Image (cartoon, rainbow, N blue to C red; front, side, top):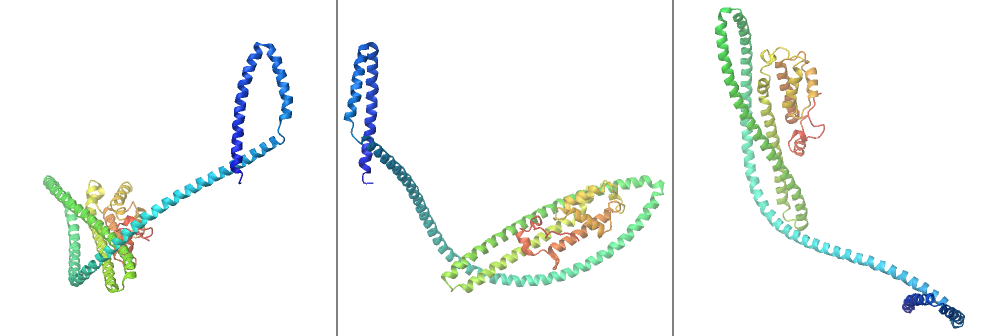
Amino acid sequence: PTSAGPLSTITIQHEMKEEKKSFLTNNILGGILKMVLRKPMMLVILLASGLGAYFLSGFLRIPGLRTEIRRLEEQNLELKQQIDRLEVQVDRFSVKVNELGVEVTRLENETEVLSTINDNLNETVVEYVTQNYIFNNGLTIYTDLNVLLNETFLTLDGTIDELEGTVREYSDENNRLNGTVINLSYRVETLNGINANLSESIVQLNTDVEVLTNKTEELSVLRDDLNASVLQLEEEVTSIANSNDRLEALNENLGTIVGFINGTSLAIDDNMDTFLDSVANQITIGQTMALGSLQSLYSQQISDWNCDFREYFLSYDFVTNRDAPIGANYYPEVIGYITNEIIKEFCLDDDNFDLYLQKEENKTSDTISYNDIVQAVNRYTTLAFGYYFTSNETRVDISIWAEAKFKCENLPFGYKYVYQ
């Protein structure tokens, strides 16, 4: 290793001498060949000179020179290999130095970001102390409102009792009207036998058609108003669901902040517990209101569906005679309408509805009538709504509705209503 410098220098000088020797030899031999070709006598002189030089070179040759040259060349090759390895090591260390420089820069940036976050957290702690005071005052207000709501619930219970009595009265009245309808049917048969009054009956029927047309227009206006109400309720449900998500996100953030505050101060534990209880209570109230709005929305949508159903099939015979079978020809169209307008709207299954018709209503496509299908839809959706909202044993838990953002299509598998 100590002789690496001189050996490298000697080898390079040797290569340069070899190159010069080759250059001179090529030029000199080229000139001599030209001269020999022109003058044959020069060939003899050159041969003699070459033979003399050959024999003379044996006397002038240095003993061991070639061996020394080969040894030096081998050392030079080994030095070149060592230089190549060192260059690879230098490149690798350069890459490592660059990577360390990038990592140092990244850590400096993260330090600045963490410092900023720490400052923001300090400001947030001050803000939440203020908010805690505000929420404590709000809790008192909500307590008073809760008392008012309890009183309102008592009033509503009385109203419900009155409404139930009214329903019973209307049921009796409906039975009386059914008897009147039977009597009117007999009168219609009698009138059909009187040919002299056909002209007047036709005029009367035309008048009735005009009245029904006006009623249809009024019902269309009412339907548009109800659709507008449905859209408004949908917007309210969406707004409440968004508020619920925001409160849940706030609750999670508060959990993180509570951990931080617990590590810095124990003086505000009682206030923070009260604050968290208030937030949790607000989330529960929001979820309850959202579920109630969804139930009202569904009830509103199902309340007048039979009006649209009647209008859609108004020209069909089974609407005129509503106790007559719909018939196998029209049954697929009727079921298709109910599937699109009712079954899918409330995340129900059309095959399951067919099963309900067969098992509960004991009806098939050949025997079911207009009145049968209307009553079956009402009973089936009542069972579904009971499962979704009101039955304590089978209802979908409000937490499941919250995770589904109060949309039945988002309910997990196994939570949608299925008649069994």
